[in-house]
Image (spheres, rainbow, N blue to C red):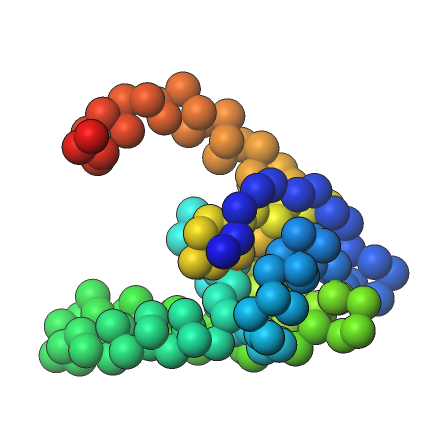
Length: 145
């Protein structure tokens, strides 16, 4: 559902606008609500409600007797917040999530199929630079065509 890379900036009230391509997909599927939380690699993960509920079921099935599962669930779910974009498609990301992702002003909004990732500009540039050269090697290891 979500594909592409978009550069945006926080407005003076600290909001970001969801790219119009994503807003069109949301309208097409009658989606109004998101869940956002701490993601991996110092970005934020944003899911539509159905996908969030699916992820939640997977993580709830993890054994709470294992410390790694407890640690992951605590960090992941304690950071979660639900968001409803305003009429212009803007969202206000909680301060603690902006701090986690190192978001100051400029952001990259990345479509990753079933989720949206929100990155601080510098973090995304650094991640992309260090990952792009191994893209083909990773594909060889992970994808069986």
